[in-house]
Image (tube, rainbow, N blue to C red):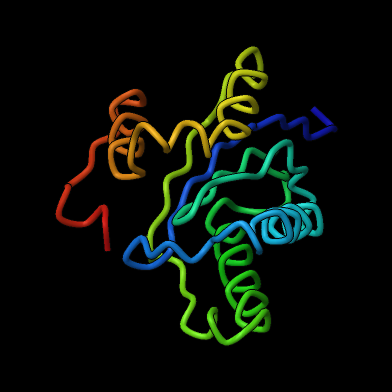
Amino acid sequence: MGQSLVQNYIHIIFSTKHRENLIDESIQEELFSYLGGICKNLECQPLQVGGYLNHVHILCMLSKKVSLSKLIEEVKSHSSKWIKTKGLVYSSFYWQNGYGAFSVNPNQINVVVEYIQQQKQHHLKMPFEMEFRKILNKYDADYDERYVWD
């Protein structure tokens, strides 16, 4: 085949270091837009970016030119540097070391988009840790609880 055809939808989730509530409403929209811009610059078309006080969700189409680990590295490093320029309150901002990344069936894109859009309402009922465990279990991910929250 002379052409490389790729269509990989990825749902990426990661939190602030120690799940600190540093993504307040004053910075959320700008941060989500910035994260989407980083994805776009790497040719990983963002479909939805959102989250809540201590974590983010990114739904994007992974480029055939970029590895998942490179995408995560770029998103986290550039956004962490950027957010530190937004005021003294963010001077000690860091992302957690790890992340979750899950493939999404193209037929389920709208479900994931809506899920990301509803993060604030969702987390009035359920903390991030419980949400992330549910996602890990949904995808039957093999994980060690001792290392998930580093």
